[in-house]
Length: 307
Length: 313
Image 1: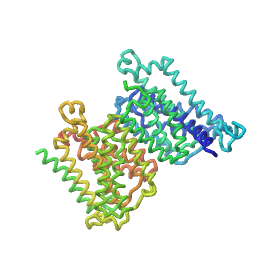
Image 2 (image 1 turned 120 degrees about the horizontal axis):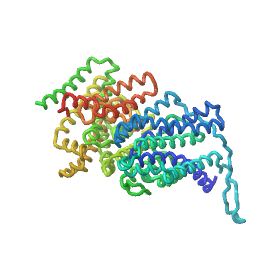
Image 3 (image 1 turned 135 degrees about the horizontal axis):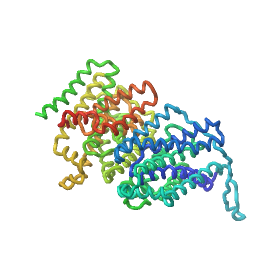
Image 4 (image 1 turned 45 degrees about the vertical axis):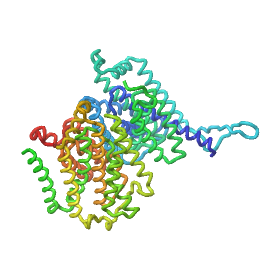
C-alpha cells in the first residue's frame, strides 16, 4: 500500500481508539470534575465491562441478542458496583483526595484479582453482532486527471463505524444530561460549591454516589464496545487507565469538551504513531508529555484555569 | 532518658535480626534477608511519604535506577561489584534530583500523577532498551561477580549479614535524621506547608532534599537487591513496585522509624502465604489497602504510638 492510503487506514484505526477513549476519559473527567477525586480503579471498570460482555453474551449463546444484552447489562452492573464502593469506602474517608487515591488503588487490585480468580488469565473474544467489510476509495492523480481507485486492504468494518457512532451518541447524551436537565444542574451545583449546594438541600452524598456510578458505567460501556475488536483480558485496565489519564490531563481536568478534543488528538496520534513508529516509544513520549503538561500547565492544554 | 530507650528499642531489633541469622531455617533465612533489603526500600519511601507528607506513586523508578545502575555496568562493562554499587546509588540520586526538580512544581494529586507518569516512562524505557536490559526476562549477575570487599554475597549467611548491615545503617540514619532540626522541618512541612514557609523555612529545598534522599535510599536498596540476589528485571520497575512500599509503610505506620520494617515483614509473609493458595495473591494487597485506609490510617507502629508510647519517632 502506498503512503496516502496507509495514512488513511491509520487515521481510521485511530478514530476507533479515539471514540472508545473519549467515552472512558469522560467518565474519569466527570468523577474528577464533580467529586475532586481521582479514581485510580477507573481502568478496572473498563476491564469489567469487557469481561461482563463476554460473560453475558456467552450465557445467552452469543450473537446479536447476547451483545445487545451485554451493552445494556454491563454498564448497569459496573455502575452498581461503583455506587456500592462509593458508599462503603469513599464516603467513609470523606472524599479526602489522598486517602481516596490509596483506597481506589486497593479497589483496583480487588477488581483485577477478582477477575483473575473468576474469569481466568485467558484473553477471550466476543463476536461482533455485525461485521461487514466496507472497502474505501482513494483519489489518485493519474495522467488523465484525478480518479478513484480501490487500494487493496483499505477498508473498515461496519462494526467499527458503529463504535464511532455509538460513542458520539452517548457523549452527546452526556452533554445534554449535564447542560439540559435537572440532574445535570444538581451535578454542576455540587461541582461549583459543595457546601452551598448542601445548604440549598441538594443531597450531595447521593450526587457523589451517582456520579461515581455514572463514571464507572461509561468506562464499562467503552469496555463492551471494544471487546469485539480487542478481546477481554483481566489486565486490560492498566493501559486504558493510563491513556485516559493522558486524555483527561491534556484536555484539562474536569472539562468535558476538552476531554473529547484531547481523546481525538491522542487517539488519532496514537493510531498514526503506532503504525509508523515503535508503540513503546510512542507511549514513552505520551507519558512524558503528560507529566510535563501537569508540571508546566496544570490547567491542561485546552482547559480553563482551575476554579 | 527517652533517647536511651529509643536507641535501645532499635538496637534490640538489630540484635534480634542478627541472632536470627544463626537459628532460622533455610527458607525463612532467605526470606528475612529479602525483607531487610525491601524494608530499606520502604524506609527510603517513608522519608518522603511518612515524614515529609509527599505521596509518590513512582518510587519503582528509583529502585530500578539503583538496580540497573548496578547491573548494566557489571554486565556490559565488566565493572566490579563495589564500583557498580556506587554507580547504582549514583544513578538513583541523579534521577531523583531531576524528577524532584520537575515534580515538586506540583502539589497534592498532581504530584502523585506526575511521579506515576515518570515511573511509567522509566519502565517503558527499560523495555525499549531490551537489547541491553533484556526486558521482562532480565539479566542474571553471575555468582563469580558477586564479590564485595572479598565477601561472597551468594553465600546465604554473608548475604544475610550484608542485608542486615544495609538495613541497620538506614534504620539508624533515619532515626538520627528525624531527631535533627532538619527532620523536624520535614515534619512541619507535612503538617502545614504554608505555616512552615511563613516561619522562614525554604520548603522547596527541604522537599527537594527529601525527594533526593528518599530516592537515593530506595536506589541503594534496589542496587543491593540486584547484587545480593543476582538478578535485575523490568518487573521491578512496574507500578506494583511503586505501590508495594506505600502498602508496607501504611501497614507498618507512616512517619515511624520502625514501621516500614514491621509492614514489610507482615505483608511479605502474607503475600507469600497467599501466593501458595491462588495466583490472585495481589487481592490481599488490595484488601489491605482498603482496610488500612478505612480503619487504621496510622498503621501498626502508629497505633502503638497512639496508645502506649507517645514519643516513638
